[in-house]
Image (cartoon, rainbow, N blue to C red):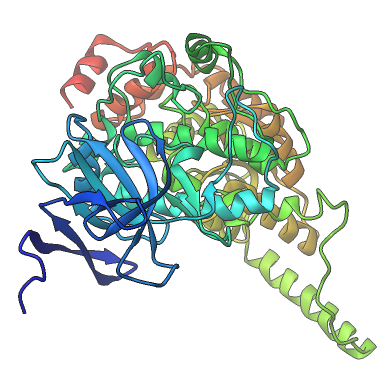
Length: 541
C-alpha cells in the first residue's frame, strides 16, 4: 500500500533496547507543508489545526494543535515551530528520533519543507504544564513536599540515566523543560535543542557548550558553564537537575541576583544555603553533592541512582519529620515458651559466631575506589607497629558495605574506615547493620570512621545519627592515620615518616599505582615528596 500523500516520506524506524527488550520507535517525516486557514479561521499546517495563542520559547514558538480530521478531543498535540535559520532545529530532531523512554517527550511527526521558513515538530501534549513555575525573581508559588519531589526525581534520574547511557547530554535541564501529565503523576523531559550526542563516553563528558548569553537566565547553569567554554556535559546535567530539585523543595532558586552577571557570580562563589532546615538530612546531603562547585567532586549519576533519598532506603530518617516511628504490622502474640525458645536460639547463635571470629585486633577499610582503598591500607601497613603489639594484627579491605557487614562477623575489627557512598550498600546503611549486630550479640562497639570527599555539617550529622564515631575527608592524611591508630590502642611506629616518600618505598614495582596516586594528590592540593628515581619510574608507567 502506498503513502496517502505523495509528499509524505516513509517513517523512520529505530530499534532501541529498553529494559532488556527491543522496542520499535517510529515517527513520520513530511517534506511538504501546506499552510492556510480552515472554515473557523484557525491556522492549519497540513492536517493539524493550531489552537489558542502561540507562545514564544528560547528558539521558535510553541502552541497546542489537534488533528482536524479526528473528532476525538483527546488527540491533541504540542507543535513546536522552529525557524529554519536556527542552527539547533535539526539537532532536536536528530536526538528525539532515537529516544524511547516513558519520561522523555515523544516525537510524533516532523514537517520539514525546504520552501517554508520554519520547521514544525509535532510532539505529545502534556497538559499538566511545567513541573514548577518560577517567576522573574526566582520564586515559586508553593514548594513540593519531599515525598512529591522524590517521586518526580526518581523519574527524572531514570530518564537522564537513559540519555547518558546513549552518550547524550540534555544540556538544558530546568523546570520549564520538565512537563507533567494532566493527572500530575508522570513528568517528562522536553526541549532537546541544546542536547549533544557523542559516539563515546569521553566525548559526552568533554562536550563543548555555547557560552551563556547575558540575556539568558543563568539560575540553572553550573559554575563551569558560567566561566568556561569546555565543560563536562554529564556533570552539568547533574548540577542543573540539582538546582531544579532545590527549587522544587524550597520554592526558590538556589542562587539569585538582580542581573545575570550577579547570578553567575553567586553560582560560582556563594556558599549553598538552606532556607528551611526541616527537610531531611539525606536530602540536604544529596543537594550539597549535586550542587558541588568542584566538578571533580560532584556526585555522579550512578551515585544518585544508589542515593538513599532517591531509593527511599534511609531508615535512619524514619519518623524524623512526624516525630514517631512508622506503624509496625500487627503480629500474632507469642507464647512464653516461644519467647524462651527464641532467646535460647539467639544466645546459641551468638556463641557460635563469637567462637568462629578470628581473634586479635584488626583494621578494616571499606571503600569501592581502588586508589583510595589501597592508599589507606598502605598507610596503616606503615603506621601500625606489629613488633610492639603482642596480639595478631591485620589490615584488610572490602569494596562494598555489605562485605563490611559480613567481615565484622568473622573477625574482631577494632577500627573500620567506611566510605559513605558505595554501589551495593552505602556506608551509612552498613554502619546501621553493624551497630544492630553488635547490640544483638552484646559485642563492644568498634570505632567506625566515615570517609567522604564532601564534609559538611549535614554529612557529620547523618554520620553521627547512624552510629559512626568520626568523619574524615579524602585523601586521608598520614597524621590522621597515626591519630586514629593511637586512639584505638594500636602501637604506632613513630620512626617512619608517613609521607608520600615512605609510602612509595613499600609499593615495589607498582608504578602504575604511584602514577595514579600522584595525580590524586595533585588534584587535592597535596604536596608530593618522593625521590627523583621513584618519580621517573612512575612517569614512565
